[in-house]
Image (cartoon, rainbow over all chains, first blue to last red; front, side, top):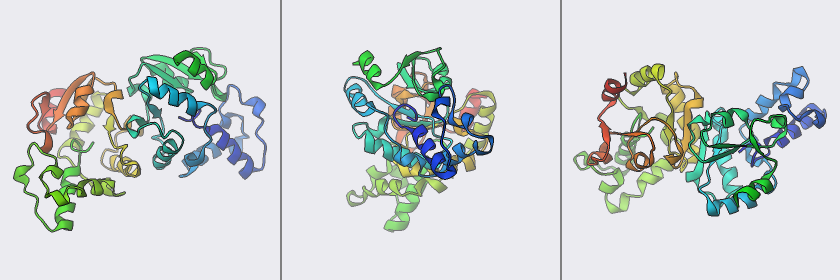
Length: 167
Length: 167
C-alpha cells in the first residue's frame, strides 16, 4: 500500500518541512529512507508522524495506480496487503482510504498484517525488499526512493509498466 | 480468533438476552448460528451487535487457549488470522484484545483480513468451514456451536486436544 498505491513519503516530507521549517534535500533520497537523510536530532519525527492517528487518511494516490488496478481487477484476483499492524489506530483510516480511492475492490481482498511471509499469491508488487525476499511467488519491486539502488528483483518503475506486463 | 480464542458467541447471547429480555434456547444452538434460532423479527440484531465499535474489546477468552497458545508459540511460528475486515472500526479493539490476553505474541504475527484463502501456512485451526475449505495446508475444525454437525474436517474439540496433537 504505502510506496506502491499510497504516497506516504510525500506526506512525511510535507509534514517535516511544515513542522521543522526545513527543506528536505530530495537529491539525497535515492537509496535512502527519509529518516536516514534527516539531521540526527530530527530522525525520530518519522515514526512520530506515522503513529499519528490520521496520518494515513489523506495520502495522495500514486500516479496511474487507480486506472491500472481497476483494469487488473477485471482479469485477476487482486489483494491489497499492507504491513500496517505496527500502527493499529491507522487501520480504520487505511480501510477508508482504500474504499475512497479504490471503490471497486471488496474489503474481502484487504489484508492488514505485520509479517507478509504468510501471504500466498502468484505475484507480489511491493517496495520493501524484506517482503519480496520471503515471498514464495514472483516478486516485483515497485520503484520508490529508498529502493532505487536494489538490483535483486524484477522491477516496475511505475504503474504503466505494471499495465504493460499484466494487461 | 472469534470462536477459537475469543468467545464472540457468548457476548452475542449476553447482549441479546439483556437488550431483548428473552432467553436464548441453547439446546437449539448445535449446528446453527445464533441468528438462525432467533425469532424472525430479531435476527438483524446479531449484525447490529457485531458492528458496534466496542463489541470485540471485552470478549471472554476461550478456555485453555492462552496456556496452550503460549506453549505452541515456543515451538511453532504462530499467527492469529481474523476475518474481521467487514468491521473496520473493530480492528484497533481486536488488536488491543490480543495484546491484553496474548501478550507473548508479536503484532507481526497478527493478520486482519477478509478472505482467508490468501493465507499460507501448514495448519489452520478455524471454526468456519468456508475458511478451512480454501486452505492449502492441513485444516482443523475447532468445535463451536454452529459447526457441530460438520464432519468434513479433522476436529479439535477444545484447546487441550490441540495441545495433545502439537505439543
